[in-house]
Structures are given as structure tokens and as C-alpha cells.
Image (cartoon, rainbow, N blue to C red; front, side, top):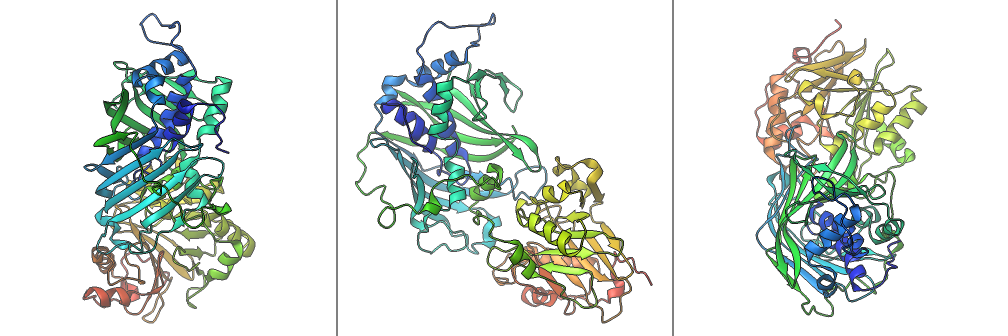
Length: 587
């Protein structure tokens, strides 16, 4: 799929090295975007000569071929580029990443995934396909204590190669957030690799042969309009610095589940000349023109260095498993794969089936007959809740992606109904990306007022909101479901919990709390107790009964609120089910 058919070292360098140069460079898509997307500029320009310039009256170039040719000339020209046989970026000072999918605020990127680190990226261009190696040490942000209680840095090496049987493999250290001392994982899974290898040489070459480039202008985040070149097939636009003709922004486009049409920019600057080639030293990823989610600096660039013979060695006998050859899974958008892998959170493709979901669904509490739990189990399984009311309403609690489609099918098959409402515990994408599937089949989205604007792709008429610190209650003659905003600040500002109790509770009534990310009972001792404290404070404020009542977290095993109380040293008051602040009792 990625075979290079044009000839010569320039073509090979441009089409593959640029494509792979940063594909594994940082824990966000920054660097991969530079070399991958700038290949569009370099490879295209290499096919043209600096001929007659077609200019507008204002002096700006209007011919995309000329824009590309000027770009490659500014970068140093074909002769200088063709002399490159190996290239190493050495980064010792700046390696930072912010998480788009796990922000505390719904308005920005206020949660750091990587705070500091070191990274070297090396390439060899002397064979049919470019080889690449990334050596990385990345210090994690404080929000990642759920995976590493002591925040031990990520420390690993990855080797990658292009071509039809291209691969990426962890050859040193652990790439597993939850197992810092584990063995190297070897070949990485197909979906993740495809995220890094898509839109590579074969596509570039095919489009170049059809000469489909067009001129397109684009605005910077500050509103400055730049001239650029766009390709409709790759959906890439390269915007040039008018003062230097060097690439400035390499823009890709995503259809984000929540933000809709979005731009994913790689801004490159601080160019320096190395062996006659202009090479940027600073790489920044900016989402939708405003969110800086990645920042990397190459402090030194080494060209045509002698690399050890085994520098790009791969696991075993070198045979790449079929499951590791890059392949496009249409169920996964690049926004989803990119966001999770950028934060070391990619769990692999969802493995659930309608049979496994059906087997995981139960009604755990006899006096709450309309309450169901979906508990797939396993390290990566995510629990959901279902509440069925007498008026035909079916409310799903939390919305992990892909599992959403199976839950919709189960409800239609077994309850004979459609899901009418979806309530995500908070906006983080592992808990909310499935919202779009429920909304597409007619469900209404229930969220706090201050989070409603986050889901821009959801029609306003399908959004039900409630005030910060308030609640939204649905009920029938048997049970009531209270969806409560916690006025949270620790993990997500729109965080809420759900409480299911009888419509007419007595002292011995069951109660079920559904929550996400305030406590995983599998490792509650080392879990961030600030989150545990936040939940218990909220439950106390709302006078939720605390004695031996069921706790159903989205992650980890189910238990009781007393499990959180005992481990945290929290002195929890005694409340009756009748005292619950948000109750709308039917008796």
C-alpha cells in the first residue's frame, strides 16, 4: 500500500522520510504531522521546475505548482535535499503535550499530558523504505497518577519502517502507561499504526501524477490570511510564510464528533540551515486555531551520521505479523485514535460483541427493577448504567464509543424500545464519544448548562440541561433517577454522579450510585484521593445514604460507598434515603 514508485533519493527522502519523520516523535501528533504533511510540499515541488511565475496584481503567486516550487527552493533545493542519507533530531529541552480529550475545563486544554522530556528521532534513507527510530523519555502530568501512582516517566524506543508491510514496534522499555517496568510490547496494533502511516507515499504519488493541487488560502489563529496549496484527496493544506516562502502551517482537517469540522495545524518555525537545507527546529500542534496541544524542539540536527548496524533492529526474526500491518478501520476516526494515543491511553480496538454485552447486562438490585448495569469486565471494559421507566423512557448512563452501538442494539432487541436519553458523567472522550450514536437514533443529551456548548454537533433541540450544582430527575411509580452536577474541579468541571433510589424509599431501600473516575476500587489505595474526597463531599452535601449501598463506577469493579469511605478516612454522616436533597418522592 505504501510502495514508492518514483525514482531517486529525492523522491524516496521526501515521500517516506517526511512522512514518517515525526510519526512517533511525541505523545501528540505534532511531529508526525510536520514530516508527514510537509511531504506534500516537498514531493510535489520536486516534480516541477522554477518556470514562469503566474502572479496576481498584488504580487502573490496564484499557481499552486509555483508555490510548491518556491517552497522547495526556500528549503534548500533538490540537490541539497538529495544528499541526505540519514537524519537525527536531538531534543533535550522541550517536549510538552496537553490533552484535548481530558481537559478539566470544557473550554480549553488545562490538563498536561507530558510536562517535560527528551526525545531523539533518527532516520535512514539508504534502503528501499525509510527506517525510523524514536528514543523518548516523557514526564507525565499529575492527572496521570491513575496509571502511575509515582508518575514514573515513560521511557521507550520505537522502530518504524514504511512500505507495504510497514510496521512500528516497541524495542526498548514499556509503552504501557499501566506497566512502566514491563517488557517491550514489540509490534504495535493495526489501528494505531494506521493512524501514523495513513496518507503516506502511495497517496502522495498518485495525486501528484494527477496534478490535482489547488490554491487555497487559510487563516492563522490571529486571523492573518496566508497563501497555500491544498489537495482535496489528502485534505491537507500547506500555508506558506510570505516573507520566506517556507512552510509555516501544515493543516489537516477532521470531522470531530463534538466540535464538527475542525483544523489540526502543525506550525513549524525557527528554521536553521544544516548542510544547505533549511530545517525547522520548533514544532507546535494547534487545534482549531486556538488550543496548543503539543510543543517540541529539536536542539540539534545531525545529518549523514554513521548509525550502528543494529540501530533499527526489530523483535524476533523480523517477520511482521499480519495483524500489525497498517490498515484502515472505518470505525475509528483519526481524531479518536490520535487523541488517545497522544496521551498513551490507546487501549486497542474495542473488542466487545453483542454476545459479550448481552452476557454482561444484569439487574443487580431487586427493589430497583428498572435499573440495569452493563459490566463488560476486563482491564479495558467500561461499565454503563441503564434506567427503564414506565412511560417508555430508557436512559443510558455514560457513553463510551463503539460499545454505544451494541447497547442500542441490545435495548431495541430485548426491551423493544429506543434509548430516549443519554447522560455522560463528564465530557472526557472515553466517557462521551458514544453520545453521537445515541443522539443519531433520536436520544436527547442530558448535561449541565455549562457543558451544553461543548457538544456543538448535537442539535440544540435534543439537549436537556440543568444548572451547575443542580440536578435533573426522571421518575416513575417505582424508582427515581437523579442526575446531579457536583460543582467539580478535580477531574472535570462538568462531572456528575447518578443516584437511583425507589420513588418511595424506606430506611432499608437500596440505592445505586453511578460514577466515573472518582475512584477505581482495583487500586483505590494509590488512586488520587483528592478525587475520592470530591465525590464524598458531594454525596455528603446532597445527603446520600452512605451505609452499604451499591457503587457502580465506570472503571473497575463494583462495590459499596463504604469502600471509598474506609480507605479515605472520611467520616461520613448517617443519612436516611428520605433525606436525599434532590429526591422527588412519590409518597
